[in-house]
Image (cartoon, rainbow, N blue to C red; front, side, top):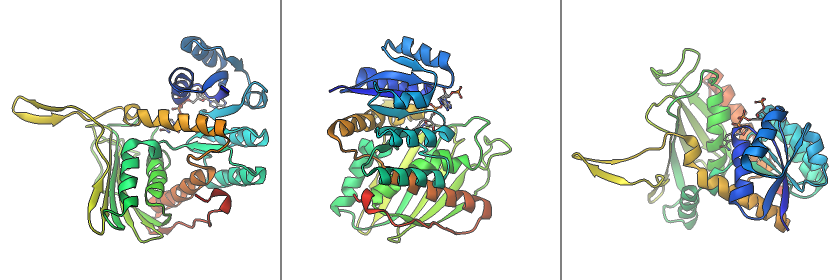
Length: 337
Ligand code: NAP
């Protein structure tokens, strides 16, 4: 059975996911699209050569009997209402991050899904589908480096637009680390502190950049994440796990090692879209396969909620400079691994 998808939001990532689900992945087709800008939605349907109906209203799309499952790729503040609508209609929904813009909003989704009685939501955290992170998790799981004691991580972008604000370093950038490091360590955060080094020359007046986020987990692992969004040289994601008896490092994306003009070099990516391009394919294929098999396994509403709770505490820590506790309610049995 081919899974008929409805996509809400036909901007950058929406178009990319429509292309994936229509032309690259197996077992799905896009039969309905909606965007606040209807002309753009119609243009996307034409450009991608798909036979999809353009809906004037995202809620009508969710209710449509031709739609089996929904992708929410509109802007963040609209996610909650569409995910709740999909749950009310009993339809599986893949929601780009953030699941909702507040932890309370994520909790409403968690509660609605539990009340429905079956998992319907997968959140668009793609890093757990990245081959490098999966290999790193396997090394930790195997016990070869012993218990993880410390993690040194970095999230660097060459530059950001003028609308990027200091708290977006947490809510837009660190949010990916907040999700993937919980998953990597199978642990939860208990506290955070944010410190600001000397300001980068490329950062606009309103932006504090770089930042260092310090996290402590329930098992006592200490994590430092450098966020540097005007680093100039490339899009660079680093993660080094220092264990009891060894160190494991996230592999670099594959690139040719060049010996030329008396130097040895390797290109670094500059576009974030390229860094996890395969992981996006794998995460959406997992959603399609999970829906068809009646069992979703990817990042859950609970993971979306946990990332939001931690992000809220990090934003408080940015403003206060203090060590801020992260109070994570107990994971409901519904979301047991
Ligand atoms: P974008 O290019 O601005 O696209 C969002 C689209 O949604 C726009 O066309 C927007 O229309 C439309 N929209 C806004 N409100 C809507 C509503 N109520 N109903 C229907 N359509 C609506 O943004 P994007 O870069 O694609 O990002 C979309 C989401 O994906 C964001 O939450 C972002 O954080 C997430 N994202 C995740 C990743 C990842 O790595 N997982 C990467 C990129 C983006 P207007 O432009 O007319 O407002």
